Amino acid sequence: MKNLLLTSAMTIAFTAPAFANDSTIEQIGATNTSTVTQTGGTGGSSTIFQNGDNDVADVTQSDGGGSGTNIADIDQLEGSGTQTASITQDNAANGAANTATILQDSTQGGNTAGINQSGSGNTASAQQGPGAATVTIPIVGTFPVNPADITDSTADITQTGTGNAANTTQIVGTNGGSNNLATIGQDGDDNIASINQGSGTGLLNPASTDNDNTADISQTGLGHNSVIEQGGESGFASNVQAGADNASTITQSGGLPGLGNTANVTQDGERNTSTVTQSSANGDLPAVPSGATATVTQLGDDNMSTINQAPLGGHLATVMQTGDGHSSLISQDGLINVASVTQGMSDNTSEIAQTGPSIVGPLGNTATVNQTATAGNFSGITQQGIGNSSNVMQ
Image (cartoon, rainbow, N blue to C red):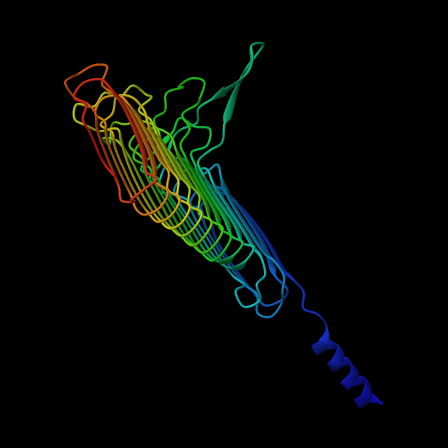
């Protein structure tokens, strides 16, 4: 009887379902360091809250045999020094979903946020920089103010699998920030990526002071969507997409002090759409040509590209499209305009509108369109200003 009871107990112990891992850490003050490792079970849940000085947090999660969801949240708030956070989640074998969130608000600079996910249904979010702040004045009331800028910070997200969504946000609700880097790399199907850098919309200082920020998104697979927004001056943004349903939007603002914005979009395969909008709306008047540069290359099938560049910059836009259903529209306004469009075989359409410099002449417009289809080509060029030149080859 004792042997029977012992055997029954062992059987229950080995066949009972595995449970999820759960960890919560709260650290306040001084030299904070937290490391969480969760493996096995039916998924892991980890929350780290650090409020204090030398913040460092690391979470590693993997599902050794279950099908649960990994959830990791790192909040590093009210920091006065450099903050570092890293989340690694691996559910590739079972396809379970991962969720990772990093929030950092130190304004000293040099913050680092890294998220690496594998599996299906991944969601990653990294936010750096303080949110909107308020000040209360007795009797008068409460008003928004601008917290300090965040500088020299890096946010990096890497996702492998299907159904991935990634977002990085730097300097939300502040005066701006400088020399920040945000990168998103996605490998798989049905990916969505978004990067937002800068704002410069505060009450006390409405002019943006975001300088020299860099954003890069790389996607492979199906169902792509990519959005990059930058505020301020001299930002660099790049989108690289391969695989079917591609869409890319880049929005940039400003020109000096880094001598201008640069956007580079490359798309490969089938329903491609790209929109680039660049502006020197802060009133930049560069001593040498600067302001906006956009290069879009689309290869394969239903391509469409729209570039809009705003006044008083050394504009340059180049679009090359090869394969099927092309359409390209370039609109330039302001100092030194140059636009070039090359379209390959099939349904080519190209429209270029240029408006010459309102001051500092004779500088101005150049438009070149090269269409290789033997029939059905359309090209319309409108130029206004000084030093106009147009060349169309069909």
